[in-house]
Figure 1 (cartoon, helix red, strand yellow):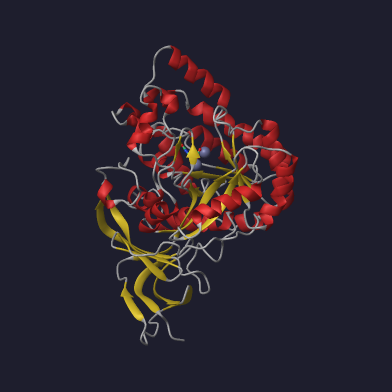
Figure 2 (cartoon, rainbow, N blue to C red):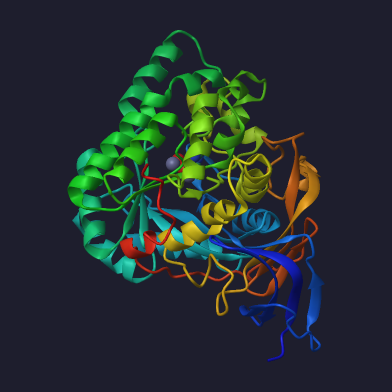
Length: 471
Ligand code: URP
Ligand code: ZN
Ligand code: ZN
């Protein structure tokens, strides 16, 4: 067996194991893992003292996403370039149904935006916002085509995205029949609207009132309600971008009752607290749900450590400072969303592993293995096994990077992490055997990424994720 590339002496980390070994690549696949693999003309990379990790799977991105009065600034090329530079080798993006559109049309339109542009592999979730019997009928077909997860909104009524509880229930019933997974944006719309209009009437229009219009109960109540709907319909459910202690406790309680309820959090909830909304550039930190308090942040780290929160997705939906100014006189008009796909791994390592909040294996679970299991990509992705795609990251635990605009690759003109220095950074990213990032420089190719049809959701697969501690 003649290897194309051999990564020597690295510390190979999977969800369950850490071993010092060589890893060999032939073409697009991992071909060998072992001690002293024969070099035999292969390109050799010395990874001594560095981690070799499965490429990250960012299961929550919004590239070129038309939202509120704007479209998110990163397209599929710039956005996935940022992903690749942060060690992400697959994204799952949200294809947004337009009013009146069939799901088939939505997928066609979204793939037209992505194919030929993506620099790493990608899959799609579907956002259903205009529900009728025909759309329900189409879900089976979509799952068959490899789009096995759907996102529904419990808020954004004014933006035309909300599905009422009956609609959510109907979609869940359909997903349950055909092994789909339902992702829920859990925020109580009525309470948000009530609080927002109260603040606006009082003339309180700055970004901090956005956050105050969405206190923890907004998310906690909606998660509770969504879980009850999922339970009644028999549908597995995934809470996207969870931000609160209240939400975590509710999810944990459902898991203790052995319900198939999974949760994701995002890097920004693990780093910041709601004090950011007092900053002059507070609008740049406006996303939904908003960042909460220290006790919420602690609960999210605890949830990750206990395996109750399964994944970390970036919710990459970034807007320029100019776009954020749409809300300069009214916080309800600030386009919601921030950049994050490039920083999933550095945040998990610097703020998690290096601070002993989680282990390096848990970092792999949350950033790669668990999303692969939940979203039907395992074992092609999410591990370092012979036969898996050679989607890999060489991660240097000693490398320090200052997170300035210049060091990051998103198209936007600011970073919410600006001036932070993190220790631990991806120094090489391989996408299906091809080196696409080296020392912070993107060296991949537009259009290299391939669409990934995913397998239907299987509870037995999901059970392979390490079980939450049911103490
Ligand atoms: O603020 C956010 N999260 N923007 C993107 C849309 C969504 O709800 O995920
Ligand atoms: Zn959302
Ligand atoms: Zn999102």
